[in-house]
Image (cartoon, rainbow, N blue to C red; front, side, top):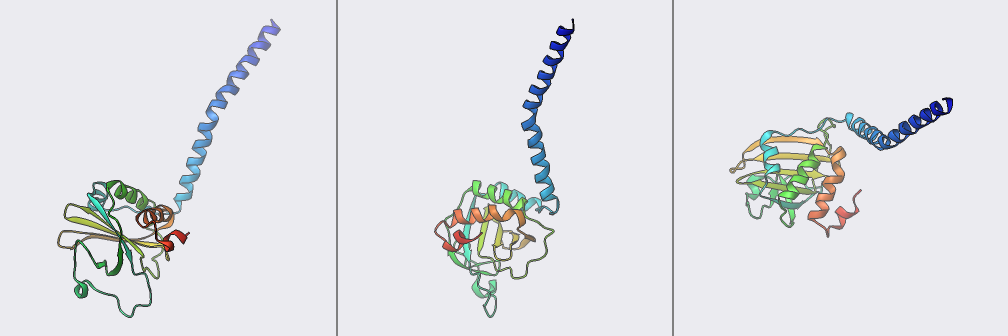
Length: 199
């Protein structure tokens, strides 16, 4: 009788141990998830307006640009001075285009949208903001410009209609979005040594 009871207790202990063994990866996964959430808790995630979200989610295509990120210009160039050419723009949000990269598809725009979710709208306003990369995301006749400065870790997002009238604008710190935005910039400009050398 005692032997049977002892075997029953040992058998139940084994089942509990096996059960915990199966649950352990799940428990550890939950801990990692909570740690990740805690890491992001100090930031204020960037929330875009509905029109901008729609453009990024349903984009037709994306133009890519390298911008003049030199900070020693005497005066900024304006749209009135240069004019607007939608096929070969020389200016993106008052920043001079120095190189046009290959066009990207909707998949690229969706990746860009996911990266921007990790930006920190609560970060302090950047000091220099001389963006070196810009993405112009098109949906029909409306577009969203995403200008990125990897020097001061800032991003400027502007949505405009067919007449280039501003519908939405926001400025944010990159914070956790920096690696993803840098990866997308390198994808658009794979031969750019400056982008490849950035951390």
